[in-house]
Image (cartoon, rainbow, N blue to C red; front, top):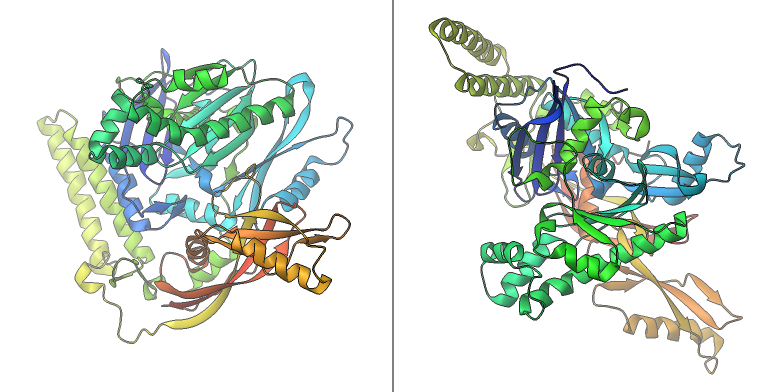
Length: 590
């Protein structure tokens, strides 16, 4: 049921690695409207691959976005809907037998354990039975790591947001679009650093895949090849783009878009095979979809109608950046249209996990953390410090609101009294024992703190299929080699290993043992994996266990184990890492 109450409102908050967008959707006498909006770029390193790296800076950035909202600041108590970053989610679709009688929950659990490359004790998933053309039944399952989900929900609680549900990004995007989809429709979201290709039929999602290619790479390549500044390249990308097929610029942009083309082709082919119906149209969204002549370029390549997306509801104040707000609008609509709670799956606010409960027993003020770019350690805020920080942000909001109203004498007196009371409460709490976060002069670590040198083992998912999401995973490939029958049997494997190793790419390594030896066909299969992203994935795994309140550095790591799973394209790579840290790391094995 739709919330028909006049004045009903909800906030949609969209946080990516590079930007924050927020909107407030309100229902007035004319219907739904975007009554407030705000957008800001996010500095590099605050959020990386959907993981919070600098919570304090992210708090500041979100509160800044909330306070500079047009026409006036957001109210933190307004129901807010957020989404877990797509980099940290896995989607899986399973076709259900028409005569299936097994409980759907049991099927979902079995599919998650078989197809989601997250350890059983760390996986959190949500699911729903959906129906395709010709009443074909499917199970849609979306999963994430419980620690990642917990870190985001804890963050939102810390800054005082009223968040009850964590949405799925592609679903929020589609919800925010004005689109007819009696036939399957493909949504291509070209952002700053990633492009997401999703397919929808009716209100359900049937496909979603991301690739690490988008507008930023195009800008960088244009700047480098044309010997111009990044700012000029960004402007040319929008104003000229693909409008001159014979130009050098066209060739540069088209070469990069070839990877996006491949992803679209894969989505269209997969949809045709899965649903028995072709995709009828492609809708482009995201800031990078503004490249001139981009719809015409894709339309020529795929022979389907391609258009630029439009928000499903209007803005109270006009903006030229409406494409950037589509996901935020979709998030807010979930809070206004109550039927979305049953129509679309989402993650609910999790209870605190065991690792959080253990941390709560400790004194968080004794933990320190450090940014890798410098040696300055910061004391983690205590509960009292967070309360003071919240009071400061509320004061800021009140001051901002006072600036936007016409103040008569009576209002001024009342306002000053309210502010005086809040200021006295703020400084009173400080005198009672709550202290502000330490200044940079107070952030040097205690001389009694000694680093722990320890070895921990992390398990990284390794995939060999491009059909699976590549974000947060080690990429690998299977290599089949022909055995040399002229060589002694005991030397065949050694020789094959040497040949295969010699043919590897610079960033690839070969697993020491073959995956399979087929004597009947005289073939041997090896597994090669890309090491270029392992270091970053190790850091991500450590930070999930260590939290944001300690510093550490990785001295070295070594791959020392490989495990197979029920999915032949998914493996688990065991990596032993030696690290120095300010606290002893207790790897969560619950």
